[in-house]
Amino acid sequence: MPPTNLPISQISRANSTRRQFLKNSAATISGLALSSCGWRLADVQSAPPVKGNADQLFIYTWAGYTDKALLDRFAEKTGIRVIADVFDSNEAMLARVQAGGGRAYSIIYPSDYMVIQMKELGLLSQLEHSILGGIDRLKKQFQNPVYDPGNRYSVPLSWGTTGLIYNSEQLKEAPTDWDYLWKHKQELTRRMTLANDVREVMGAALRMQGFSLNSTNPEEVKKAYEKLVELKPAIASFTTDAWRPQMLTGDLKVAMCYSSDANEVIPDNDKLRYVVPKSGSSLWTDTLVIPKGAPNPEAAYKWINFMLQADVAASLVERLSFSTPSEDAFSLLTPEVRDNQILFPSEATLKNCEGVAPVGKFIDVYDRYWTKLTSG
Image 1 (tube, rainbow, N blue to C red):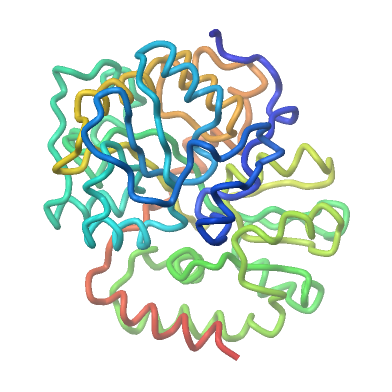
Image 2: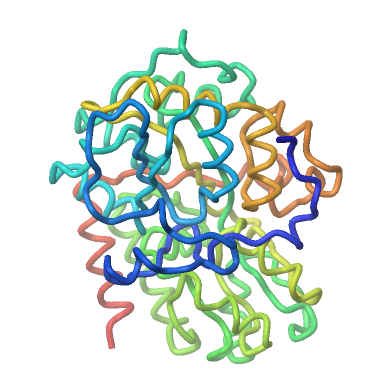
């Protein structure tokens, strides 16, 4: 099946973000219909899968990273049925893996910083590159990433940035940096949202003041917290996805969000724009890994090779609205998508961005400040 040439504005995916999933009960999930995708979650389950069937591949993934067309195409090519279970955060996924539930899966989709943590915990199998095809055709920055030099344990699947989506009609001037929120907080009072993510929000306040997104300096992190306390009375809410309808209706003027989510929403309102703040933001990557003890590693390698195929990767960009690290897939995209600065920002934009990295036990400091900031 060739990659679709539909513009992204005409393509829908699950109504959830990269970092969020509907927190319904297992019973509700099993029967939920995703009308925007046109398929049911018949192959997305919460019950522990049965191991050992060579004709089945169980994967643990973010919501919105698979659709029926993808699963059907893989089954047609390999004869292997994919059953996808979903997680709503890297931390929830890790907890399940550490509790033993991860042994049921042959493919897991951790983000960059979580690859480091899972590798250090001895949870990942080292990849046999001789079995894989296409890693050498990844964009240069993804061939030797800082979170996994040489891609020894992971293969990058998608990437993006965190920034601000705003209503160009409602704002007197366009935001260019995080400090815009502070400078215009009277105008923006109760008309802006920040993400419900401690590292993203604290990271934004750190970058705005010239500090690392991953600072472990107590004074720097304290200053970031104090800046956010100044802003809090003007913040409508901390949310990663509820901003969408409010931005479309004009109830919000600006929201912190992921680039892939902004790219989905903007076609529905031509007044909306997206910007990566010039002082820097996060540059995230989601990956494919094979956990130790995977019940079907042969099928896992077939899945990774399938996802590395240029036409498959290009089709996912067009259908599911995230950026590909594959040079060959990028070349197959329509000019409209290749020139999309939300999905594929310039090198100048990316140079000040950082990946979110583990901060060890210092995460307790972040969490304490976050609890104080968001409570009450």
